[in-house]
View (spheres, rainbow, N blue to C red):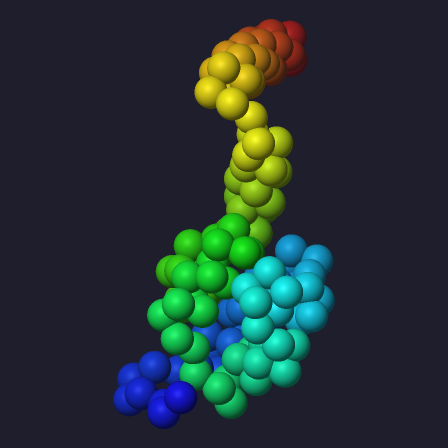
Length: 123
């Protein structure tokens, strides 16, 4: 792929590598998820190969991040960890199970905050 003026494929590749490593994936595992070779992932991460729009979208989906995270390196690691954990839990649930889990999560959050307020009041 011809390098485009204004697109820094080395930075994009570094962002992909950072996110992949945070997710605990090898280059081979990521390649399998997006149906391309380990060599292509390696070249993409090093910035020696550009990235197509199709591959960008496939990578974002496989890594469970936005395309902005890949292009701009904007990722709050802790927030994304929790977002991904929640997503992983509800991914294969039907609508009834999701509704129930949302109710449980909301009730848990409300109780946690109430408990924290009681602790703060004791101090």
